[in-house]
Structures are given as C-alpha cells and as structure tokens.
Image (tube, rainbow, N blue to C red; front, top):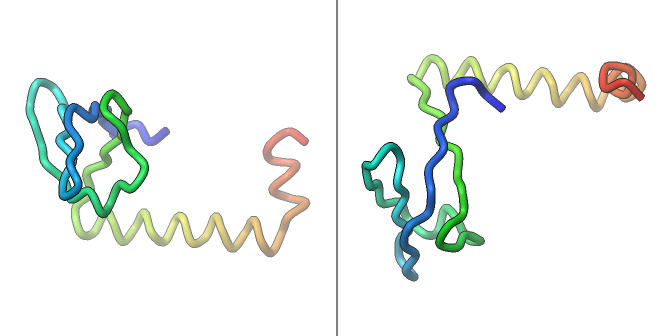
Length: 80
C-alpha cells in the first residue's frame, strides 16, 4: 500500500452519496464513484498535488508497460 494512504470508513450510504469518516471528520463523496460499498467498508484515500498525481500516473504506466512487455521479468520479481 502507498505509505501516505489514509484509511476512511464508510459510515452512511444513500443512492446519491456516501459518507466517509477519517480521523473523526466526515466527508461526503458521490456514490457514482463507489458502486459497491456498504456501511463499515474501508476505503483508502491518497492525497496528491497536481504534479504528484502526474508523477504517479507515469509510474503506474511504466509498471504496466513493463509487465506487458516483459512478463517473465515480472514473474521473477514476484518470486515466481
């Protein structure tokens, strides 16, 4: 897991929104972004600046391309 991820608990669910609780603070979020959640579920939130988000996207893209282009290398790195 990303070291800066924060755990939030789903405390309320309606057709339109969900309510998350993180460190005793409530946060509402559109339900459309979380189709399969229930009260009590844990969701991890990861804050990014605009620049940080772009950097993270690039790292994910590199990892995906490496796993597609070098599948045997990916298996070795996972201990298989």
